[in-house]
Image (cartoon, rainbow, N blue to C red):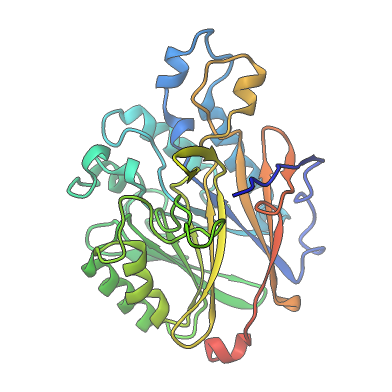
Length: 361
């Protein structure tokens, strides 16, 4: 596969505008795989020593979102974290405190939802059987981030799956969050939530979905599954598609993270971006978007650090332009004050369906 050359356009941030300019548009910010911002190991072991705290990058991302929220005169209506909040599960509570402090910047400013990634389970090395005590403590339904919030819908009894609602451009939306490799019971719970909220457009938030392998029969096309998730396994991405997404016209968009490399003849290439569209059982398109920038390390290289990579402050900004029935995808770094403008990073998703017909409104 020919790798797309990255083109980074460094310009002043365009999001800091008045709400009046965006009267018919709104943006959803996608926060992905913040684990390296919370992990001190690479900073501690680096030679020469780090010149800055990676945790501060996380905070600056959240300040950008808060400053450009609708409440503060911008157009960001909602924020979605796709998981891998921390790196080492329950091993270091300090990581959870960094994440807690950073995400708190959004509290009472912009509604948001968080899902657990594989690194957020108490034992990331065996997350299939590990608990989520730390995740539930800091980001569960009873945490300060969600308890008592009018926009927060609730969670299942485990606290691993949750949902929230928000209104923008005169429409109500729901963000439905599922844990990594959701079980049959998780999908049953999700279906009940959908059944109770019929006709509401739904964005599915799940950590591990679009995989980092590419289909050898069609080079350049990402498949659903990574090497650990097979189509016939419960909890696989294909299982989520077959038993939830394909059956529900409400789900029109999926956001995920987890994979920052794609593989080609056993060579690893850092990319962190994928997009694909598939039609559900009724022929409606479902747009699927992967964002994971944890491998980005331009700042570390510039400072001469022997770094694992932090993420360089990159995030997705999905600008909804419902008047023109499209979503304008942008990719922005708070640290570089840049937009990345290659074909994977800046593009437009045409919403190829009748909005009223699909959602029954």
